[in-house]
Image (cartoon, rainbow, N blue to C red; front, side):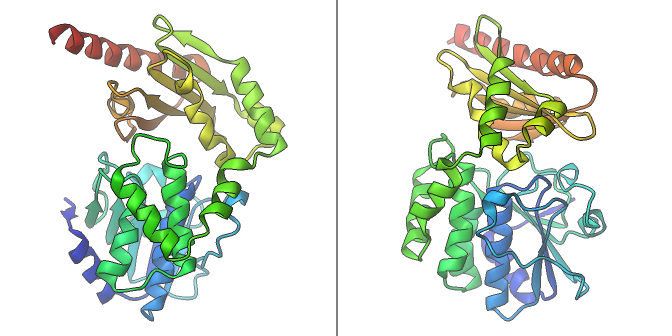
Length: 329
């Protein structure tokens, strides 16, 4: 059973460690990459040997981050996972699973964290792990926020909140962003890179997704799908598809937005986005996934029809629960 830590204790264990390997999740996004590199830079500032390892390559959109990748030059004696809620999310490449087995610490913001690490620092109220580190690095580790660290952490805070549009962005999130900007984060340049630039392949993928758009349950649920063939044909990178998940939920009257993306092994990664009264995590958790109240996900094996049927059954249950609660008020 994992040991639950507060920030002070987690920082103390990091200060006492050396030869530190920081793990991020597969199909890396801005928060797992930004938090891994931001923490790595902070630990190196303390004179520690630290590096980052991920199962998959970094998406092109994050190439402005100069990541200290693990090259095997040292044997890790302390393993930290950031923004990874369960073992299944690590991936299988680059010998990642060898180090997952001995994860000493997990820093996460997912309430559904499975507790696979020996110790965890989990703060579900935080919009991103980078939000947690914005305070932990200077206040608990004692490392000043340099412009390089600030750029890393701003990347995660901005991307995990959809540039502060999602309901997960709280007053504390905005204060964290302000602290990062004061420390030298290039918010304007990063926002342009992350949110205003779309590749030709990304636009083609969005067109394919919109052609698949379907409505269910009196238009309370909207779904878009991309098969592996469509993803390969458009040439779009996985990271560029992340913001597609907000598209079906943005339709007027839709309470549950579903995005299905077929993975190389044939399974479907399902992203769930919901309105204020519908629990996205409850939907995903029943299918082995997890996440947050308004944004969650899971993976389902089988063909597209099976994946649709499985997720729609859970959506129907959750909508029924919401209706029952509304009727009892």
